[in-house]
Length: 377
Image (cartoon, rainbow, N blue to C red; front, side, top):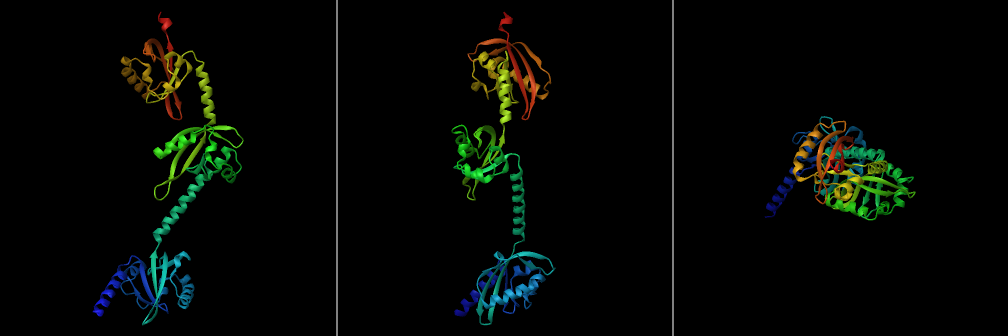
């Protein structure tokens, strides 16, 4: 019965040995190969049993053999379980002379036939390729991070700055990244408007990212700038949100220009409305509010056709689509004796001129609406 159990154990061991995913090589104290499994023959390019009886140094590049011999002697004198890949950059040598990176784990055993060393060898070529690809990717990202004209920084959810590039330091008026991180212990203090960062975080939590989020930011010297923020969440391996990464662009000059333009059109005698390609209202002047009875907030973002009587909306939409397909570069009188509708549903006669304006975001239409009620009388 004992012999039968012994045979079963030997068969099981042989099966594990032969079908192990890593190369397994057993050598004696002289470094002569006693056994090698199928994976060892495969990764080193030898045929069945071709390795048996040969010195293990044939699997080691020539330049490493002297050091290997010294290591083997030292190991035999003081044997222990050892992971060599964590200490050295190791390479194996195939039969055809090519080399490949390996990790090696060593174990030992005292047998009736004497002391043996068991080596488990893993081909880490793919791992090294991935490691190099990651290194290149990280170096590329670091180059983009350090040299970007836009401010890029990472924070924890609770507002602690983890990293910031030189553009952030410059935009916020600090002398170094270290000074910025040490001075701004809570990024919420950068926001000039109370609750603005909380609103940003809520949007990101809901959608995972946010684009073109505008906010007013405090600089080191107390001055304020307008910024546009694109941000997304940072997650750990388990998928938990651990922080935010933001790209911040200084739009102070643009906001100043918008304000100047708003002041300019607010002085115009006619109602002026800008609409996008989907016919949503982007901008209105003070005269528009007075003429139609809506507030600015009630108009921005809503469809332009709320200012038209129902019976004219479909025809006007078709015309606008045609106009967008081939916008004129000059102001054109589109409708004479047209009718517009106020918030209280009362109607009044108007003259409408439309003009295309090319912006960074595409073409918008600027509409000039003149109340001609007095002229009609």
